[in-house]
Length: 121
Image 1: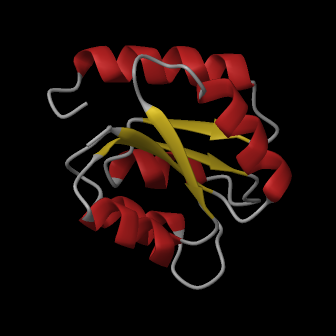
Image 2: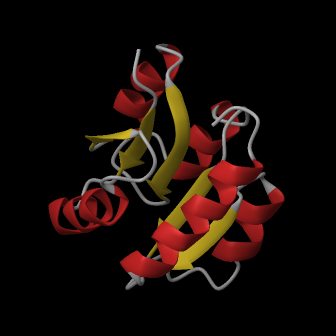
């Protein structure tokens, strides 16, 4: 089973930008979903190497998804107006935080580094 990078974002533009930025990273595929609940179902399949999630999602939040994805690197992206958002997600175990708008190239470089460091990638 091919390992995947999971993109969880309900904004189609951001999800597409992340998918394109991550395409061809190693031998990993990219799977994108629009909700944390859908992300949980993908995580349950056991073939996810890393997750990139938005913080503010419909229903379950990206922070709640982070709590169940502790076995893989998780990068959080957010346009949250909360000035403490970065500190909160890093304290909760995220590997990195990028405010929106973000640089797709910076996220790709960070993901490359995280995948090299992660035994589960």
